[in-house]
Image (cartoon, rainbow, N blue to C red; front, side, top):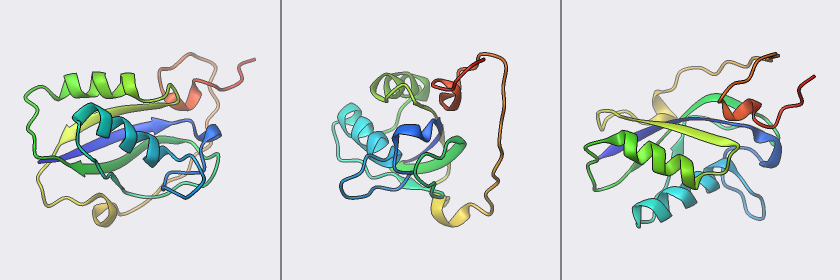
Amino acid sequence: MRYFIYFSYNGKLYHGWQKQKNSVTVQEKIEESLTILLKNKIEVIGAGRTDTGVHAKEMVAHFDVDKYFENPNKLIFKLNQFLPNDISSLIHIYFIDFISKITTNWTTYFRYMTNSCTSSAIYRFSIRA
């Protein structure tokens, strides 16, 4: 079964999305958390990349596992407990022919300023006036 994970993160502590030798990345943290949670080596394929220190408000990736989750909300809840506080996720189930890397058509970059509290991982460690 192919599962899609939509997530946000504050990239301040990471060397981007994609796994790299000798650097901590968002992909690495998500794969580690899923591997522990599902008791199976999980490889996550992302739809794009970010540079060191860059945040993502909504990024998509997928992973395959030979397990069906009747209640994906339980998986989301547990995964968010395993992930660091600066990464948060949602999971959706899609048809098997969707591939994150190939199916994504565009990337949009924004700069945000906020004066309210939010649960997005992007803003969890932001400086507030």
